[in-house]
Image (cartoon, rainbow, N blue to C red; front, top):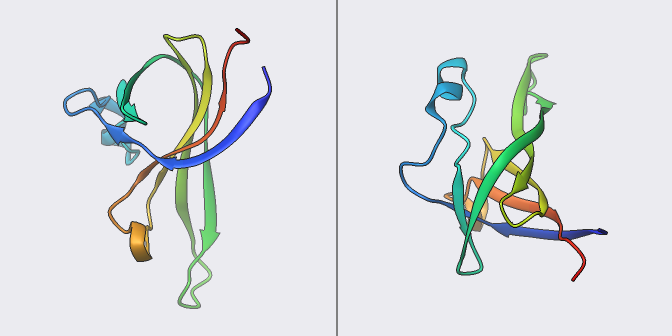
Length: 106
């Protein structure tokens, strides 16, 4: 299964977010999301990590920029998705993104 770069917005299905993560300041990972008019269901979270960066206003503090998730889907694909904490420009309302996908060979 080769990994394929996608970089497209995904839309979480309402009321499927894991709200338990939100208590620790993390985004509520959706259990289902829409991508290219398909509903994708997450079967398992394989790993998580954070991307950090320095303050953009000169402070020495570090901030979380993105929350990353590598997930297995019910369709036997593996996806890397992320939640963007600091969106800008034309995509300022788009927080969830599908970064890459590994689909099973047909």
